[in-house]
Amino acid sequence: MAQFHEIAQPSLSPAHEATSGDPARFHRQALASALIALGVYVLTLAPDLSWANGAYDGAELITASVTLGIPHPPGYPTYVLLGKLFSLLPMGTVAFRYNLFSAICAAAAVGLVVLTIGALQPRIRPAAAVSAALLFGFTPLVWSQAVVAEVYSLNLLMIAAFLLVWSRRGAGASSSLLLGLAITTHLTSLFWLPAFFISGRRQWSRIAVGLALGLSPLLLLPWLAAGDSAIIWGRPTNSAGWWQLVSGQLYAAYFQPAIDAERWLNLLQAVALGPAAFLAGAGLRGYPSNEDEHLHVHAAGTISRPTPILLAATSLLYIAFSLSYNTSDAAILLLPVFLILALLVAPMLQRPGAAALLLPLVLVLLTYGARDLRRQPTARTYAADILRSAPENAILLTPGDHTIFTLLYFQQVEGYRPDLSLVDGNLFAFDWYRNRLLERYPDIVMPTGDDLVALRLENKSKRPFCLVGLVSSSVPPISMTGGRFETGDGAPYVLCAEEAN
Image 1 (cartoon, rainbow, N blue to C red):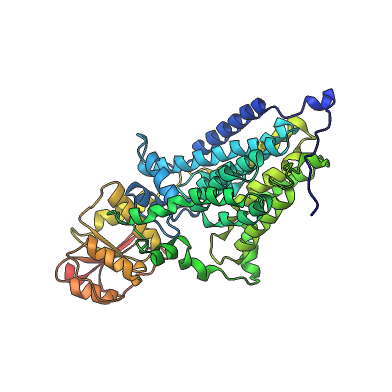
Image 2: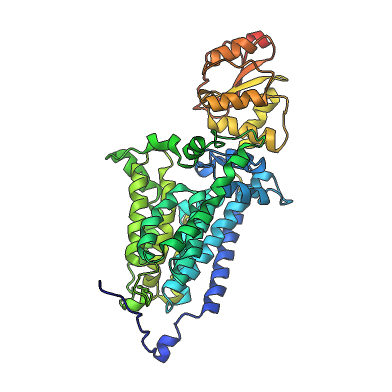
């Protein structure tokens, strides 16, 4: 088998030396880029619990993290534990602290992208690296997740850290550990495994050890399940339940590889502005042609670090999955593609020099208004109406995730209305959920199966029973006559049984 050999570095002319990579200089530029991104994110940060930018899981993630529970599959233990630390910060509402957590993670990812570009292209001008990283950070999709409580910014940070170590040290234990951690923050990080294994095929034993350590937070799920959090998905206390949770089997039905023109058009429309900014840079020539600029090999003969081909192939996996995942927010799954684009486009931004920094500035000016969440209505406004109007000691039946987790946030995290028993009509279909409800509310008479009508009938003489919803599209899970409270366009609503009046 043909062996690769260490590529000798050619001598540099004085002019070329002026633009060669200085690690200290890249560190300064990385810090500056991260601070710039963080400053813009903080200026547009949601001040409280927000459903903006598709952050409908925010209330669930925050509540599970604060109470050390388990959110929806795969459980996100790394987010839960790191978020718990941020929840202790003495500033703003708890929700604001988690929004800030996202901003810091995304800004740190921007800084690491600068360092990764410097590692992959040691002779690149710092202005080009900074421009590419800030284009990534201010891409509307990336920015949208940096200002709300979600898992995606943490996932981008873990991927950026993984790519930096992979670029500097090659495929090994340390880079695989970070890849394992990235997988615990979002399962789509599994798409990095093929390229990573190809690059480190001579070090599989070290990679396996690192991956195992990186994935170890998933082993904490049984411990989290033993707690008393109001949000604990599934039964991860046994091997079958643990695997069902961490593998995300619940969402397998959403994977529908088929040509759906409308879905694909919506996906492309959602991310159009970001690629447009990158393509503006890609039109500038300057990608290096010398092999030593983009191909890294070990003397032992293994391609050890990310190459443009490996990066592009990984981005195609993300794109293919996003096109096949039939959900309204599938575009969010493309976030790592923009990180990859930043690495690939950076060399093309060398020709304009410092003028390349105008590109992210233009992007900010074009999208700032749409990303600014400081004055947008928050979920608190709607939840307060529900909590104020609900009868004392009532059982509240909710129609889905948006309502149940928002109300749980205000009850479990901020301590509002601890007298209420919160039950979700969709989750009630799971026997593990009904069992946990029985543990949490032992005074509720629980039907033997998924029977919400029986739940109402068996409890109507003991406690008020109300249907509640926070969003206008939510449909009450059962029919019931009684008094009704509404605001605005039909949301929120509180509908209480006549028997409880």
